[in-house]
Image 1 (cartoon, rainbow, N blue to C red):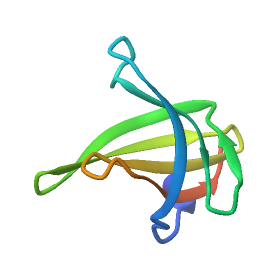
Image 2: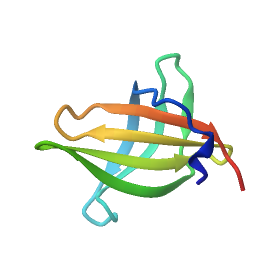
Image 3: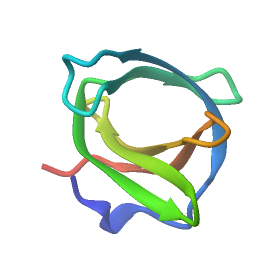
Length: 92
């Protein structure tokens, strides 16, 4: 994923449908998300998944795509809230 098209972080609260399983690498797999405006994004591929530490809190970042745009969504492990951090065009 090319992050050069990303701009200032959005930190927009989103609703996420995800599966949690001990048989899935990383245990959590987001399937789709909905923005506050009601737009739904179906995730076709997950790129990198990485934790970011903020004191005792861990935020998990997921770089995902729907096949036409790239997104970074995060899961705050303390509040269990999801956020859309970045949205950019998909470059091949």
